[in-house]
Image (cartoon, rainbow, N blue to C red; front, side, top):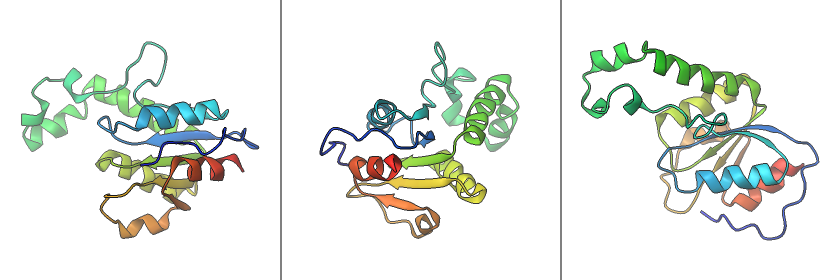
Length: 156
């Protein structure tokens, strides 16, 4: 993924409220959030939703969450920590007018982007070489191959 900006980023003509959907394991997520914020956009960062809050993690409920049965997973969705994490992200999704999916990512981020498409919000996908093609990405407004391309679209 090309995270280099070709020139100093143009200040946003219209500041956006952006929900960045990605994965905890995506090494590019933090740089994308920082670039959007530097351009003047308001950005929800699920890794740092509020000062002093490092976001939701299943391991807060149970360090052995990867070994859960299906029934344990369903029960954990009602845990107060899971309910709080969901509320934080869902409220941010409702707040946002623009969604940027940063690949690679998993199921949650794709559910978030699909919800945004259904709500009529502006949607972008930031992809890179080596990503598996996904046909349903056609429902999104833009599929970008560089951060510069996404920033140029968001600046307008």
